[in-house]
Image (cartoon, rainbow, N blue to C red; front, side, top):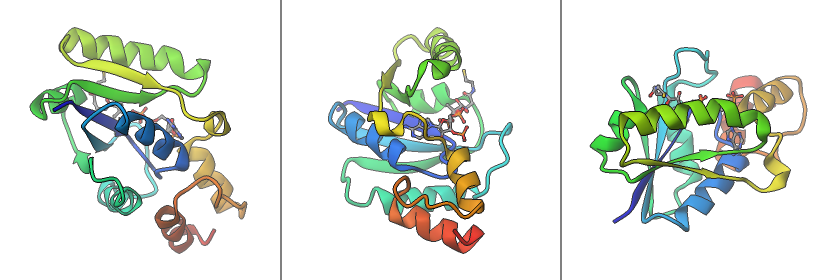
Length: 160
Ligand code: COA
């Protein structure tokens, strides 16, 4: 049983995240999406709201679970879940330096857990959750970039 953790702030979850999730699902028996409470970010949706939305988005994937990571180290969480890997999406060179630091620190803390980087489809390389929030708030059409349950919540929150 090969289990992987897919962590992120997911504020909100996008089609780019789904793209990564689908690729990871082809490689691992089980994926746990871990919704992080990142103290450096001020999220639009609470961790519970984000987890709830993601559950609706991944309902059709039987090997995907959703959990929240309220405190502590991601690597400790991954170890506790007996995961063999941490999944991260790598969209462009700009992501690399930050991801490299985190991956190496996590490997130092727990050499048995490997960070696996997956590249999304090119059409999602410029996508971020911040851009979705901003374009949505300013009235732009974001329906090509977020799953329906997310669009519904964004409509209710900011009237996109
Ligand atoms: N499609 C669309 N957007 C994507 C994407 C994809 N495929 N892959 C990444 N992104 C975006 C995210 O939406 C996010 O956008 P935003 O900055 O506008 O919100 C950005 O890329 C990266 O953020 P995210 O993936 O949410 O990661 P993060 O930088 O918030 O870090 C953790 C999340 C969980 C990895 C990190 O906070 C963590 O490890 N926390 C636990 C504490 C810990 O262990 N710290 C020590 C680490 S060594």
